[in-house]
Length: 403
Image: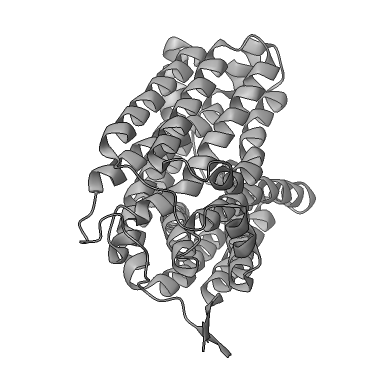
């Protein structure tokens, strides 16, 4: 008996729901609609923090804890959803999670006190992390194995669109209608996504290896542990810098409020393009993408941090930053499916947990660096950590035991 280490392949034996190989792309689009509604709800407080704080008679710092609660609950909920609903049809589960998000948004819209809003955002965190943990395993049963990267690209287009749309839409409609009405609108979007999933998704049986044993089996895999550490470093490094991008942009000569909004929109458009490219790269050159995208991210962040007075370079750096990180979710989720084809739900849940923990810890570490050393140092350090994470992730190998 020998243990052989081999590279992560560009294609893998990932089971599809249709053995004859036909894809259910309508179901993939339904997954995208769910992701768009959920991520839009997650990002909304960034543009509505002041009116929420005023409406509930709390400080903006207190209101911001609703975002923290959404992220932290995902660390637990992501891996737990599969084992908790081990026998439930995945279409039914995803519809339920979309409706849970709708309930969360209605509770936020009607919250008389902060604690109600906090509970509502915890429910949203459960819905988001649960949906993400199921996404790659469900997508793998909707399309042929060679097209998994493209399927995840379509699903993650929902993230890219939400990144571009959520903050400006929230700010505009919040000023027009009030912040509570905006959350009602997003609740309607979540219900519409649930309806789309109900009619466009086929019935999807739970993936093999969806219980607690599979979860702990994935956690015992050295390859998975190395990969999760790489994912945490990559995402944590990004958020250590991106959380403070506004402070870094303050050194760009002549930048107005409108200019900052345009800069952030450019970042979002870059992310949209990066996700489209990642769909092809994930299917053909996965390991290459896992090295190149973080390297581009690190270089872009460094240029943005050190040369903000060179306006064309700074703008190009922000676009490339968005492009590089925009491709990360598709690459990472495809990597998880390739290294754990028999435990994709468990792997998906662990990836969600790593991402959510990285968001919280990365933002906190970046804040400490900003206060202790400066924003430039925080941005550069975040870029370096992201590059190291990509290198670590790309070196993870799938172990194979041969008789």
